Length: 256
Image 1 (cartoon, helix red, strand yellow):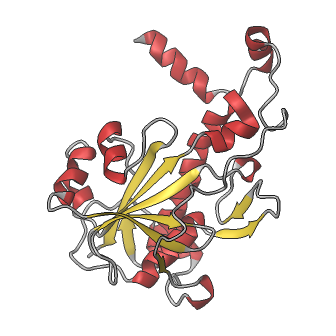
Image 2: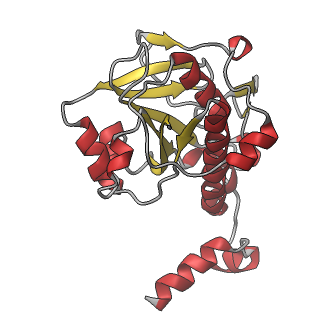
Image 3: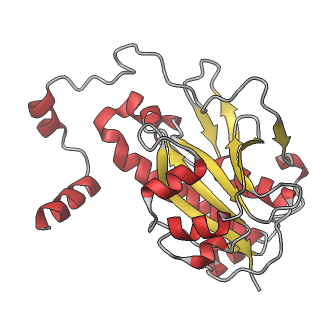
């Protein structure tokens, strides 16, 4: 067990380049080797029907002052049965992964949240229970287009599957929606190779904290969840668990 603890502590430290060079020799990344960058966003079928979201310029929600949102931020584990509006979901998605600029060469995107090399390694999935205008089921946020892509329909047991995937934390299944962030590690590995993974973990924190503050801005609540069953949650959102897998999730709902 102590060996595993030491491995975990090493993961938290800055990269020891001298040690890596002794072990692997040349540390040239795929980017430095001239390999084409991976897509900035997971592809989707050309004939897919996309769901329009409310554009950022048209937001009327999220008007709580920043200092108030920071001061009142906390984790919520009790949600009402009230649905979120499509505008509120649009605001939360924009606040966590909204795109400001896309590189003409398709190497980076500048977004609302910071990312090493602007590589932005996450795909955002929504497991919807109660959102006005959306049928229950799984959706993926297309950040570049600011639209939603329907991934799969809801089963009769969706609430139970969410709770099971969260190790029995029933409140997760009772939320209006669950934000699930899956990483495609190669987006960052292409540029930073073995130095990527600490960076990906740090960036998950940036994204979730923005969700916390944005939820305060619409008088709702959330709770970051790191205790989940990897295979169950990956299966629920439909990712392969190897080249794309869940790293963090957070249920959102209205609070009393």
